[in-house]
Each structure stands twice: as structure tokens, then as C-alpha cells.
Length: 88
Image (cartoon, rainbow, N blue to C red; front, side, top):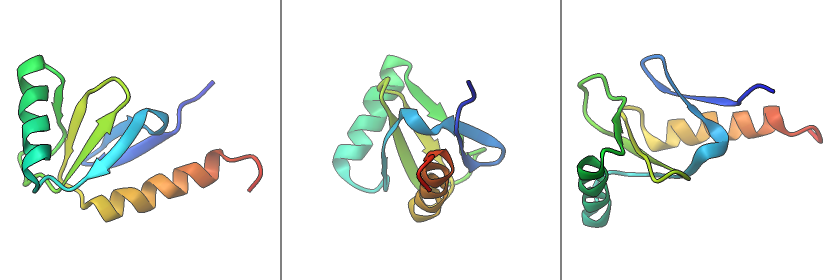
């Protein structure tokens, strides 16, 4: 069984089925969520040193930082959903 992978920038991939949310990093609650994940060792920085433009939250409570715009990730995410759907 293979996994559907979501490209989140700079060659980094995430398993599509594990993504719970894709959010902008600008709000105070999301910044707190990021800080909490860092303190718990559950923050994954996939920005390659660039500005964080999207934050992905997984079902394992990991928080993944991406330098790709959330809208771009959503387009890629929707494409993966269609690929994995046998009815389409």
C-alpha cells in the first residue's frame, strides 16, 4: 500500500491522509500553537530558512511549517484527493 504524498515545498512531502488543517501563520492563536509544538518537540520546519507562509497541522498533533502559500498547498491537496478517489 502506497501513501499519497503532498509536496509542501523544497522537496519536502507530507502524507495527505494525516493533514487535519492548512492555515495562515499570522493569527495569535496559530502563533501560540506553533510555540507549544516547538516546546513539545512536535514542530517540523520545512521552510528551508524562508518565511513561513503556511502551517499544516497533522492528526498526530505535529505542526509543519511551509514556505508555500496555503492556497497553493490546497490546490495540490485537492489534486491528491482526486487521484486517490476511485470514483473519479
